[in-house]
Image 1 (tube, rainbow, N blue to C red):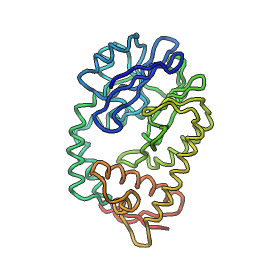
Image 2: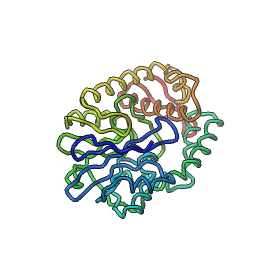
Image 3: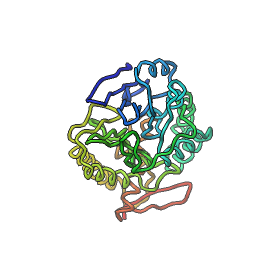
Length: 310
């Protein structure tokens, strides 16, 4: 259900409905030096223009934390409905165009997952799901570029790569609007995908360390309630991934295994095709990190990538 809630002076949470789990995504209205900023937009849905009117404020800007559909999908609709400019990280916009502006992307994803051992039935489902998503993604072309250290209405742009390569947050007076970088009850997905940075889990662990250094007093996440002890939550997530790394290593042995095969041990065999995609991508990000740590090695060719313990 669409909802607006006042969280603190100058921070309002805007909850947009989603048609699938987790059933909602949070955007935020932030008081800026030049007016109100909207951070993230939900999906492109027929009633989004009504949601824009219901905000009840004039927007000075629309900021996108990262290019995933539930955060960027409605950006162009909000720009058209409000006249406010859209601002997005440079790398994030490049990937946004590369993925959502590419009608062949679902086939690219399917081929890439096949290289990592995913069976044909699951890769075919990826093509169908990817095509279905297109109607809900209307990203804004040529947004104003953002770089780490920039200020938007007095809020500092902070780089938080990991969940997405170009993920950013906004920091001001001890409050961090963090998109999906830090979530209170679930672990943000950190997967390896085609044409992305080579070590997303390494990036994410560095971003968690950066969060502890920034020491915000509160984090406003893209899903769930505000996080009042961000440093402790960041440490929990570091430990989660350390355990997951050990579990992924345990799924390997002296004989090569594909990421798909390893994911059956790490995440279990009973998953939907969509969930298996995330499981394989997460397994890959952990396999790459294990290679970086010298605990595993990649073997096989381009069409049949495999991994084994070092």
